[in-house]
Amino acid sequence: MKQLASIILALGLLPVGPALADGGHHHQPADHQASAPQSAEVKTNVSLSGNTLTITYGPLDLPTGHDGELAASIPKHVFQVPQDRYLVGYKSAIFTKDGAPLPRQYLHHILLINLDKEGVSCPGEPLFFAGAGLEMNETKFPPGYGVKLGKDQKLMTIVAFYHGAPPTKDVMATFTMELAPKGTPVQELDVYQVGVNVVCYSKFDNRRQDESDEGIEIQPGVQVDKAPLKFRMDGCVKFAYPHAHDQALLIALENKTKKQTLLRTVPDVDPDGVFRSFQPHQVYRDGQGFEVNTKDDYELVMVHHRPLQAPLLHHGMGNYLLYMTAGLCQDTRTVLGH
View 1: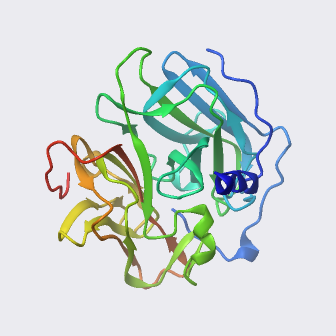
View 2 (view 1 turned 90 degrees about the horizontal axis):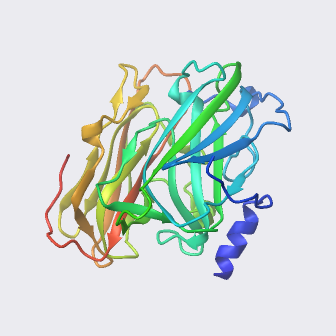
């Protein structure tokens, strides 16, 4: 766990606060990415009411800068839950202080990290257990499954707003987590992050030349990007949370050894390629699940189309957060589409 400790220090953590009580990406050149100065009073608030844990960010004014490797727009926030609970669903939103919704492209990302648990997919790093980008899908795991949030574990949340957003006053965002009622039997899910782009913090130095924090450069026309994958655990995937940017046409997970397509996720987009959402039938959710294992060879695939006349450079991502139980599925089947 020494490497885990060094990663935590690299994140530049703030002191831990008290435990809770009930209570389109149109990228611009760097010299055009103006940032509004933010007040030191801009902060994150966390509240727990019954089975709902709500994280509220802001208000702040856009555009805003990004700080550090994980691109925080406001200080990172560390919190705890007062007793063991299970995360069974989550959703995000972005809006102005008076409640008016804003374009989803204004939100770059929200990250939820368990600093006291090592991630399986990124050895030596703290667990990235939930998050959202502009897809803003409402997540609900199959009944009876959840991600454990242990009592007194240090949980950190990070928010980044898109630095190319037009000037907008009093912007806020929320990340709302649904918890299983106390005493409900829940089978624990492991969280495994995979992507065509590099997803492990400690591997950022190994990114290809056309990849940055924003993603992989998308050239005009059709572009297909692939990345090999070997899983570090045997698991039965019950839910797959997808993430992509503007101009995305497809992300997929394939078992090359067995010649099986396990996930094939197509976003709903505007005619010019601006991302709208992943429709519910495109988000994998199945209590029976499908298997992944340490022996087979896998591949991540993402396909983009950037209109030939589009003047601004775009950056693409193709990620999944795979929520799985440890070990193989009880009743194996091949999954293609949903």
